[in-house]
Length: 487
Image: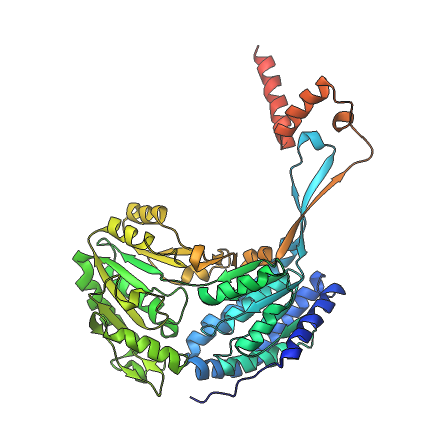
């Protein structure tokens, strides 16, 4: 696989790009719904036009199969634009809320306002989707946006740069480069930063954001467990765990990082996982056009070291020149072994036998809060118990990955796995300011709020403030009337 030369934005131009976006926002360019929709539709058209180039770039950077690249990157992005444009009028409309009786006559509304200039810093594992989806949310909310793709996916970085620059819009801009350019970008003042990546860099982002009191959305990761009960459908569990784990060669922040399985079905699960690997990728996954590659040599060597832990139950084949590590299953792993020290982020799946589901819950809760939690059981009481007694950014019962594909659910972490969430309306709201607006009539001016403060006014105020919804007053009046009629 050839790798393009890294594209870099000169450091002085980083500041210039941010200033250009700020000027466009300050001029009011981004505020109208018409601009937001037109910009999103133009982005959609560019993505469709450059689809073949994007597919080629994703294959070059990560060995992504065409089906996988389209479904998880291109199609996902196009669907998000379509759903956003269809719903944007209703999302952006002022929302009326109740006004307490004490503040009548009047009306109260929530107005969704853009924040200003949003920075989006994307990772390499889904280099298109994780750059453009936060940018779509930022544009939908009426912000200017400055994007920073990952330099570790250079081919995709280059095509995305060409797509963004073809919009020829100062409010939607992009910068390229590595640590130096990202550091320069973080010196600038933004109104929100969306960062997807690891917790170490997230701390750097938060420290930089704190200099300007800039809020952040952090999409991180962690060790997302899959818990398999003895009451699970083992065939289905194996198929869905194998798919979620080996998608993108395991380089997915919500991939099952390890499996906790009740001892009585441990061997059956391992056997079925082996069968599924062969069913998906054949007897030699290296020859499969449906299996990806490790992003670079450094990550390859990091993952290769894990293959010597525990017992090799499947896979373990490697080729450094091709950045290939076969789908691998490890058994006889303990919490103290290297695969359990940090997020694996590759096609290596430890399987840990546990005595019962209480032990599984305890095991999960002893670690940091994961980005995702997967539970496999045909017993509803078991799944409800596990969900109730654990926490995670998101969860999926009898499945993997797909909870992030529903635009009506938020995608985000908790604790060490991140803060804030987006996707669909949640992204629009995360990158908007909800402004409180109260308007009062001047036709009547009740004296309740004004001095002198009489006992009568105090009595009315106590009742009025505690009656937040005027409908409560109507209900109370009708209840009193009904009570009188009964007597």
